[in-house]
Each structure stands twice: as structure tokens, then as C-alpha cells.
Image 1 (cartoon, rainbow over the protein chains, first blue to last red):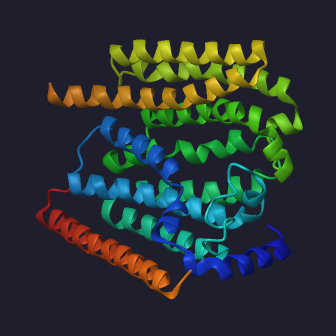
Image 2 (image 1 turned 180 degrees about the vertical axis):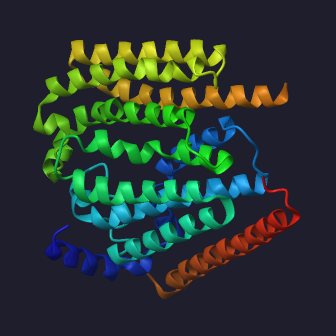
Length: 306
Length: 41
């Protein structure tokens, strides 16, 4: 963010800041992203070997949610200038002038430190380190370094969104294992086709803000091809929990079908080259991730009951 | 925004912050109980 625009932002924001409501501060924490993070973190905890007292499990989830929200707030501080330009983000609390950029930074920093500390003191060191890495990765690697510099921003930056199930797993087991890495890999490989599908019809928005998303830099055709490549990679990774033995046959079959539908949707985007198929793939990608983790959660609940 | 509306919003914010702090106090109390009784693992 440039200093001039930051000063302007803050003056404008401060003038209207008195009208900030509690809901604006909550919006600063990106609640929709937070809900996905809480869900995947919960699944990581559910499928991990071992048990955690419900109060501690709730605390671990709270730390994951607050840590994710905190990094979202810091992201809004740093990206206030481009958020104001893009249609999708112009109503966020900082560009809308409801909360000042300094407040966003202050809240984000305080909550980041608090969530990592609480995780370390109450749960375990491995989960706390992973949470700190997630927050740091999202802020320093994705937001500050990659987002405005390379079309690979989503590919590498996607790691930040992929950590929560690993943190959940570590909260219960105290370690990092191949199973938790597979959960990480599912979200990591899912992220690029998910965001690129969105950027296929939001590319003008990104171009206006100077964010080098793949369709802006390399064109829509290359983006469509990349979507297909990642969707092909996603299929075997999604089924892997079954082959590694921490998911059952129900998941094995279900994930193969979902992976197949995902790939079919990606091929449709590639062949039809229209906005409708990109929107359909984007919508399905959200359902896909939810169903994949819901199946893992469902199986672990059934296993616990039987 | 009128002064009355401003005060109302300020009051709502204070209540939310107070509620969060109270919830944290309860949470820390429960964590302490769980940790002290040794059933945390």
C-alpha cells in the first residue's frame, strides 16, 4: 500500500469511524473464510488419533478461528488500497470507511498473538507453531509478497488456507503425520482451480486493481488449461485418505465421484469457454470441499459410535 | 448520525466487548478446571 493512499484512507476512514458497529469489527475477521477454516480444523481434530477434552477441543477451534480472522484483519489493513478498487471487496470495513486501517492492524496483531499464545499454553507447542506459521504465511508470504507480484500468488498462498486441518490434527495428536499432510494437500491443490474459476469472470476487477491473477497476466485460455491440470491432480489426492486407511469405503467411493465431477466441470470450462461454466465450477468447488470434509467427519462420528 | 444514535451504537459495542470478555473468563475458568483435574488429554 502506498503511503499517500494510506494517509487518504485513514483520514476518510477516521472521519466516518464513529459510525463503526460491532458487526464491522466482526466483518474485519472475514467470517465466511473463518467458517471454512473452523470446519476443516474440526475435521482434522475428528480424524486424528487420540482424544481431546471437549473444552480443550473448543479452545483449539477458537484459536484456529481467531488466528484466521486476525490474519484476515491484517490483510484488510495492507490491501485497503486495492480493496477499494475491486467490486467484490469495496464494501469491506476498511475501504468502506467504517474501520480505520490502523484499527484493523491493531486488532489483527493483538488477536494473532493472543490466539497463538493460548494455543501454545492450553493445547500444545506443535499446534501453536503451525498456527503461527499459517498466520505468518498468509500475511507475509501471500498478502505482502506474492499477491501483487506473481500469477502464482494463489498456488503458493493457498498453503495458508490448507493448514487448518493440520493444526486440528496436531491439537489432538501433538504431531504432524502423513495423514494430516494429505488433508493439507487436498485444500492446497483445490485452491488454484477454485480461485481461477472465480477470476475467469472477475479478471477485469483484478486487472483494475493491478493484481496479477493468471487470466490477467497469461490470459483466459492458459487459466482454463491450468484449471484442468490441477483438477486432474486433485482427483488422486482426494481419494488418498481411503488408500492410507484413515477413511473408509464410503469416503473412497464418494470422493472418487466428487473428484470426477470436479474434473468434468473443469473440462467443461476448458471446452465451452463461457462465463456460465466457470461460475458453475466455482460454486461446485465450494460444495466439493465441504462434502469431502463432511464425509471424513461423518465417518469418524460413525466410527466413534460403533 | 445524531448524538442519540451515536450513544446507542457505543452502548452496543460496549455490551459486545463486555460479553466477549465475560465469555473468555468462563472459558479460562473451564480450561483451568480441565487442566487441574488432569482429564485434558
